[in-house]
Image (cartoon, rainbow, N blue to C red; front, top):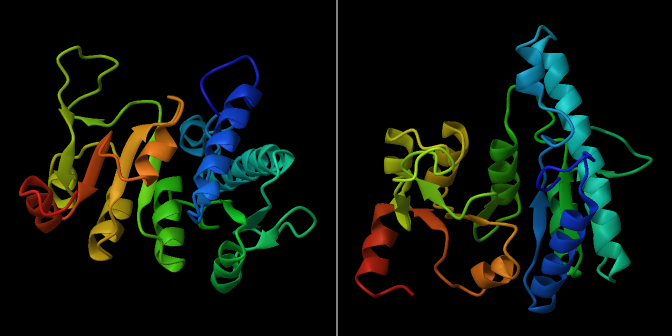
Length: 234
């Protein structure tokens, strides 16, 4: 979890995220988190080397549980009650995912961390995040990443890459932009659930996003984009 380091879990990055989460909880914002496991294990990458894809994906899900426990520990150490719900039953260290129970935790001011993706192979963390967001009636999906938004090509490799401050679900799918996989974007489009892509590792960015500052890239419907450009929505 976090930028590359000699350790698979970057404790400094975990603590940074935990403190940012505490700040937005203090604003009264309900927080539910879906974590990937790529810093520990990438199922797709390993499957390409010969391990059965289903097995590799389950191994990746277990990596997300490890990350979830690390983040839970960091958040609770600074005084914010947190629950981990796993799509794979590991009762000794997490609750099973139950949508109504997750909603109840949020009502009580707890942070909820969803681990183990959807519990099914062949589905990405992006799809898991959107699925959980829909199930708990979230207002938006915040995709915190290592870049400050969506570009027409990889900004790490192309200096002339152009950033999209606003883009519609349809255009993101047509352009095959790597904001999320197509299943996740389509689910957001079908449920009118906006996606905000932003740089996780710039201090204060999560708070800026939840306070409504237009930063990073907003992926939403054409109608909402027209309203924003027309000044109707701020």
